[in-house]
Length: 277
Image (tube, rainbow, N blue to C red):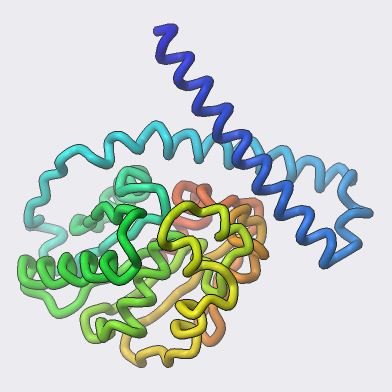
C-alpha cells in the first residue's frame, strides 16, 4: 500500500508541476497581449478560477497517467447487435503522448447513452502523422466492412483532431466520414509545441508547413465538422488557436486541455452532436 501511495504522490506531483508551468506560460503570454489581465489577477473571481483550473487539471492529468498502462492491454472488439445494430461506428483518436486508455470514461459514457460501436486505437508518438493517418484509414475501412456501413464518425482530441483533419482534407477520406468532432485541437498551432519531443512537435508550431498546407486546403462538403475548445486550455497557446475558421465552434471556459476528455459540459456537446442526423 505504501508503494502505491508513493507512486500516486509522485504522479500527482509531476502532473501538478506540468500543469503549473503550462498555465504560468499561458498567463504570461496572455497578460502581455492583454495588459488588463495583470490588473485583474487578484480579484476573488480570478483567484477562484485559477485554483479551480490548477486543481482540476492536475487531477485529470494524474488520472490519464494512471490509466496509461491499461491502454497497452489487448482489447477485444466484437460486433454489437440489438440496440446498436444500425449505428455508425464511432472512432476516438487520442492526443500526443496519450493512448487509447484516456478515452475510458468517455467511451463508458457513450455506451450508457446508447452508442455501442465505439472504437479506439493507439497512435504511437514516435510515428509521423502520415503513418498515423494510414492507421486510422485502415481501421475505418475495417469497421465499414465489419458493420456493412458506408461511413463512420470521428472524434479527435488534440493531435488526434489534427490526424482526423489530415484524413479528411488531404487524404481523401471525406466520403467515409459523416461527423467529425474536434476537442482541444491546435488548429493553427501552439507556442508550446517546441517542448513536444516527438516528430509531431515541429508540425504543431504556428506557421509550420504542415499547418499551412492543412489550413489552406479546402474542406470537403460532405462531413459535418464541430470544433469544441476551451478558452482556458493550457496546452493550446494561445487558446484561440484552437478555433477553426469556417466551421461550427463551441467555446467552453473553466476547462483545461485534459479536462476536455472528462468534463460533463464537453461531453454534453459531443453527445448532442452525435445524436443529430
